[in-house]
Image (cartoon, rainbow, N blue to C red):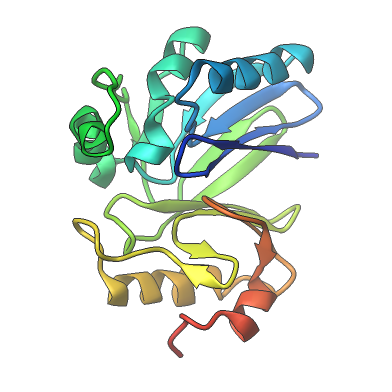
Length: 213
């Protein structure tokens, strides 16, 4: 059974997730740990729970989601796994960081990329990759049908949706991603967002004021 630990990191209040099961293998999703104390918080949790990080995966490569990339890669001898359409953003994240007034080195790049429909395995568990552009090219969500949850990054939030005014953002693509890959899930699927609290697919179908039917 998958356990999920959420951290809230950096000035953007980004949600970083660690997923692990009874084997103690874990995956790290969207490490936004920018400051030393945030990196320590992540590392202490992994050590205290005797976890073994085996994968580093990204919903997308905006700066607030990748700023901890090098720390995780170097600490746990991992390479990031992303959708190939997001590679440009990862490669240029050090320049994007300057826009927000902080400094970071050029990010370590992936050896390989995943695609729509791929399965990410760790321990006895797995996540399905679904390609969900609209907020940005290269955005994916991760679905676990056994425990009925989805990690949506910046596609869907509680009572909101991802911005589409960044480069490669597209509102129509975002609506397509939500309706065809998220709202096809059962109402009781729990939604773990890239920012803010958790929600459910059923709640967002009824209450999200930004969803265009």
